[in-house]
Amino acid sequence: MIKRLTWILLVAAILLQSENQRSSAAEARKRPNILLILSDDVGDEVLGCYGGTQVKTPYLDKLAKTGVRFTHCYAMPVCHPTRICLLTGKYPFRWQHPKWGSFPKKAESRTVASVMKRAGYRTAVAGKWQLTMLKDDLDHPHRLGFDEYSLFGWHEGPRYFQPLIWQNGKLRDDVKDRYGPDVYTDFLIDFMKRSGDDPFFAFYSMALCHDVTDDLDKPVPHGPMGRYESYDEMAIAMDRQVGKLVSALDKLKLREDTLILFTGDNGTPKRSYIKHENGKLIRDPVSIRVGDEVIPGGKGELTDAGTRVPFIANWKGTIAGKQVLDDLIDMSDFMPTIAEFANDKSNRKMSLDGSRFNLRLKGFGRPIRKFAFAEHRGKFWVRDQNFKLYSDGRFFHVSKDVDEEAALDTTALKAAETEAHERLGKLIARFRQRK
Image 1: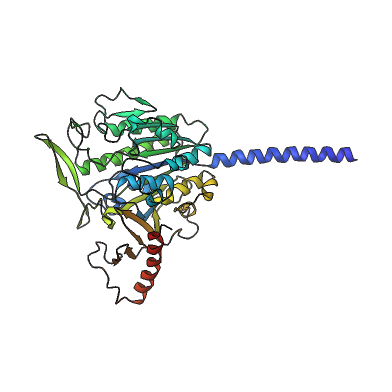
Image 2: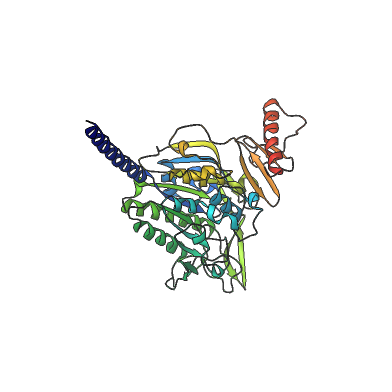
């Protein structure tokens, strides 16, 4: 009798273990591929789905219509600190404000790519790096967690026409007469094709819509037409690259298995190079029409024009379409959210500034944060959807005064203004003490 009972228990244990293994495998298959697209120099007003009427962006508009569009996503007003924040989930001052074109050594193993790799994802990055001089440190993307990369070097050569591209430690020699964004996109499509049964994390750090840098010995055209592209033309090209990636996911039958996240590194630029004359690059002002209003670019400023960026999330068959959320999101939130989709819990043990918005994408839960943060050149602000307080004391009712033309008199505030000023003031004091 005892032997029979022992045998029954042994069989039951084996069956339970087998079932657990099947459940774990099924759960692993549920983890989505993640395609994170970071546009360069694109404020939210550029896109048609945010009201822009100057540039046609049909592919991004469709992603927004069939997914979730956030109206209050904020980045740093320039690209380098945004990238550090996005990759690490921590505000730049936590890393002692790394110098331009560098990445904190202590953070190399704590990036979103490192977390995803440890969780069993295949990882790749393409496009813009700007976190080191690649030619001097070709292993840098690998140390940050990327299995594969195809990147143009920061201030090392062209990024558009006949780009200078480092790919997995070697300089590409097959880019003659090619358009850089096509090369970066094709690299990621090939990476996705080779994903097999393993989930992937693909980070497209776009070159578009940043203009050509002014430090090249022989300035070269932006695009395939043999001339510089205007800002509007670059925005159209950006949208087409996104469309190309989405189409590839459809053809590969990976669309329903892939979460697409699209955002930007800072606001629209104030100027953009349009031509080269007499040894000099000539810049034109950039402004975007939204209905009857013309919005000048604000990159480099802590205003909405410099920090509010688009954020669209799309996961066919999982995320419901036609969602517009006014939740506050900032760049620190992407790292913990992406890690959560990978079922990785290690990020919860890290001291991060970011919060997870996973449930919000599916229409559940409450908004994840009560404030957003941005900093630039020693100044910073905290804000909610209605009010914004700067570290220098300026206080704005931004839902009524988007352009911040008239700071509120803090000695004569109404009840709601007083409550907001006190609440945001506590945060200012906390961040001033680096807490």
